Image (cartoon, chains in turn orange, purple):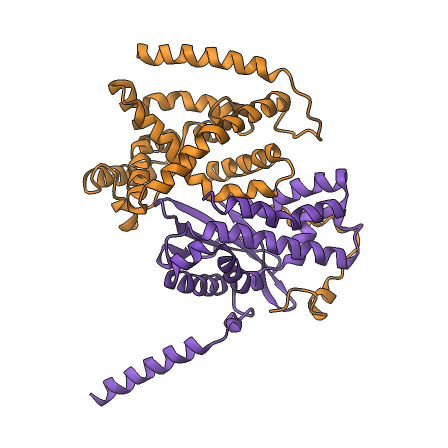
Length: 261
Length: 214
C-alpha cells in the first residue's frame, strides 16, 4: 500500500509539471460543450502525442513485428484476463448480477483451462464477454456527463473516467501483481500491447484536419457506447441533412452518377 | 451409390457455378443482413486464399476492397450527411466529387483494418434489434481481431432507388459520418470546400508512408 502511495506522489509531481505546461495554450475553434478545459487538454495532447510518436508507437510497432500472431494473441488474452476482475467488480457495482455470474465463470474458466488466460476458452465456448470499468459505473450511478480530460501520459479521458482509474490499482490484476512483485516489465508490456492494438486504426488520424478534435470525438462516442453496453442510439441523421427543402437525389441514381456497380 | 454420385455431381456443379459468378454477384436488392454476410464472405474468401499476397501489396488489397465493399456504399448520401449545411451550398457535381473522394478514403481505412480481422469464421452477423426502418437499418456484426479481441462493427443501411446501401459504419460505437462531419464541417467553414476536397484526395500520399508502419 505504501508503494502505491509513493507512486501517487511521483505521479502528482509529474502532474504539476504538466499542468504548468498546459497553461500556455492558444488554439481557437468553436468550443465543444464537453471540453471546457480545451486549452489545457490541447497542450497535454501535444505532449502525449509527442511522447507517443517518439517512444510508445515505435515500441508497439517493434512488438508487433517481432511477436508471432499466436503469441500476440496469447499475451493479449492473458492481459485481458488479468484485467478482467475490474469488469467483474463493476458489473456487480452496477447491479448486473446475472452478468456478474457469467463473467466470473468466464474468468475462472480462462484462468484454469485457459492456462492463466493465455487461451480464451470462454469465447470459444460462446460465453459472452464484457467490458466494464469504474468510469462506466459512475456513469450508470448518475454521473452521466463529465468534462473531457487529457490525462498526462495516459491519454484521452474524462474527469469521471480519470477518477475511475484510481480504484483499478486494487482491482486490475496487472497493477496488483506489479505492486506486490515489482515486475514492472508487466506494466510496460501492458501499455505496449494496448498501444499495438490501436496501430491498425490510427490511419484514420491522417484524415483528420484536427487530430485533437478527432480523438476527442472518437473517445466520447466510444465511452458512450461502452456505458450503454452497445445500446446507443444511432446519430440523428435527419438532423445532419438540415433539409429545409427536399434535396432531389434521384438523379444520382438514375443518371448513374452514383458509383456504377 | 448412384444417388451419392449424382449429389456429388450436384455439389460440384453448384460449386462451379458459384465460382463462375462475376464480381457483380452482390445482389443489392438483398436484405441488409444478407448483404453484409455476402460481401464479407466474398472478401474473406479471397483474402484467406492469398493472405500473404495481400499483406505485401496494399494496392491489390485496396483494389479488392474497392470492387467488393464500395458498391455496397451510398457515398452520395453519406457525403450529404457529412457535409450538412455546407453541402447545401454546393452543386451536384461537387457533391459527387466529394463522394468519390470519400469512397477512396473508406477504401484505405477498410483495407488497413481488414488484415486485422482473423478470418471469415470470426465474423458474425447478429440479429436485428431495435427500431429499423427504410431510412436507417442497423446491421450489427462482431469480428474477432488477430489479437483475439472482439470488435463490434455496425453497418447502417437505407433503402435507395437501387436497393439497400450502407451510408454509415459504426466501429465500437464510433460513427464515421459523425466523426467526419465534425472534422470536415469546421474545416470547410475555415478553408473552403475545394481546399478540403483536395486534402482528402491527396490522402493517398499519407497512406504510402503508413504502409510500412503497421
